[in-house]
Each structure stands twice: as C-alpha cells, then as structure tokens.
Image 1 (cartoon, rainbow, N blue to C red):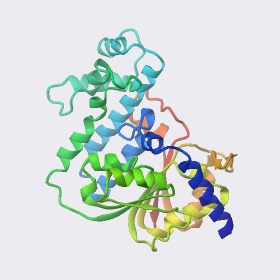
Image 2 (cartoon, one colour; image 1 turned 180 degrees about the horizontal axis):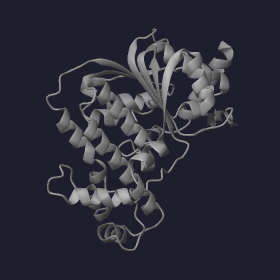
Image 3 (cartoon, one colour; image 1 turned 60 degrees about the vertical axis):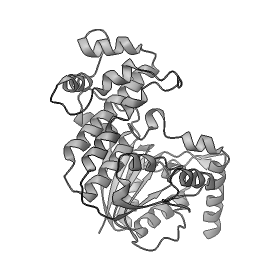
Image 4 (cartoon, rainbow, N blue to C red; image 1 turned 180 degrees about the vertical axis):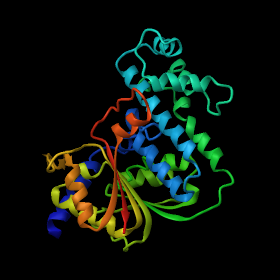
Length: 330
C-alpha cells in the first residue's frame, strides 16, 4: 500500500511542478476562482471568523456572500460578451437585459445613503483596467470586502486557533486570509506537495509556516490542529489516496474540517478518471458521506448551488457540482 501511495505522491508532485512558478502563482486566483468572489473561498474565511467569534459577524458574512454571488453573475454576463455599460443601464432601469432579482435588489440597496458598503456594481462595470484587458471586473471593486473586513476586525480580541490548509497552492487562499486581516488571529500552517507552490507561498509570506508535504503522509501529529480546510483536492486523487487523505484529515484535526469540492454528484459511486499522470474524478456524495461516517465523524452537506439559490432569488450558480462538507469530530 505504501508503494502505491508513494507513487501517487510522485505523480501528484510531477503534475504540479511541471508548470512554471508564474503559472502556479496565478492559477486559481482569477476569474470565477478568484478567492475574493468565489463562494467557497468566502465560506472558508467566514468559517474562520465564526470559529474565532461565533455569530459576531453574521451580517458581514451574509453581505460578503451576496457580494460574491453578484460579482460572479456579472463576470458570467461579461464573459458572454454583453457590453458593460448596457448591462449597468439594464440593472439601473430594469429594462432590456434580463437581470436576476437579487442583483437589482443589491444595486438598489447600494444606492442608499445609509448602506455602509460602496456601490461595487457600478464600480465593477464602469471601470476597466486597461493594463489587464483579460480582467473583466475592475480590481478595486473586487477588493471591496478586504477593507471592510479589516475595519471590522479592528479591536477584536486576539486569539490563536491552530489552522491547517491542505493543498494550499501558492498561498492561493491564504493571501486573502491575510489581506482581509484574519491571519493575525490564527496560527496558520499551509502544506502542499509542490516545491514550486511552497516557494511561491514563502516568497509572498516569508514568516508564515508553509511546508512541502502531502496529506497522504503528512507526519502531522494527531489532533494537533483545531480547524482544517481544503479546496479542490479529492477530485485529483486515486481511490486509494482519496480514502487515505480523508482518514489523515480526520486524524490531524481536533474540531472541524471544511472540505470544498468542485465536481460532486448525487450518484452511487465515484467515477475515477485517470488522465495522464493525474485524475479528474466525479465524486459520489453518498460515498463521501459514508466514508466520513465510517471514520466516526458528523457532517453537514452544503450544496453551493442550492445554498446560494435559497438565499438569492434568481441566482443560478455556475457550477452545480460544487459542494462543501463541514465535518465535526465526535
């Protein structure tokens, strides 16, 4: 078994380290995967905040999730080729372009003098960065909630929860945990199997604990971290490694693990698809839940499309396979 898992580590390492440092540094931090607007990244930051100060930032979290939903919708419309000025006029006037109810409601709220957040819809559509023509949403608009969070966290009592991120990439999510002001309240460790990713992460944050390691055999002591989160890993593992990674995650975490998936279906079994020296799997929600149950932990399923659709009238998520599972140790 160890030979199989060692081979898996080797192929995973190769599959990432074959890319350049720059590609790894910019991958998964743009477009719909931009952690500032991606719902699952927003949820990771929200769960960190709620673990530190339970129920204290409920309204801000809700506003941040709404922001991500609106910005993702705007991005989708711009990618279809709609003119940004016509799109804004249709939101303002309720004429022409079909606009979801929650987007127009949000726009109207943002116009209120009492509303504490700036009009990020107009800012996103009125302006464009001419130096980055591929960037469809104005960056200053996308950064709306980083400053909002930093201001909200001023004066909060310092805490020191131990937080582990598995498959951290080139500090893909951590750079925004830091930018939003949350990093000073957590004792963070990020692990990734790619030496290039860890080099990139350390270049950005030389004082932060980034390590080259695999969750298949991390060497991290039992229950040595309070909380753990991971984005988009399990779909790239073999069946053996998937079971081992889940077992290791629940071995090292003490309280809760927040598992984010991008390709899960309600089906009877996993569809394991080897592609070259990698995997692009479709995972079974039933099998994942059974695996967690067999390991003696409780869980809550969050289908992202339903989660957002229930919150915001007219919302249709871009990826119906996105699921988050919140796992609580018994």
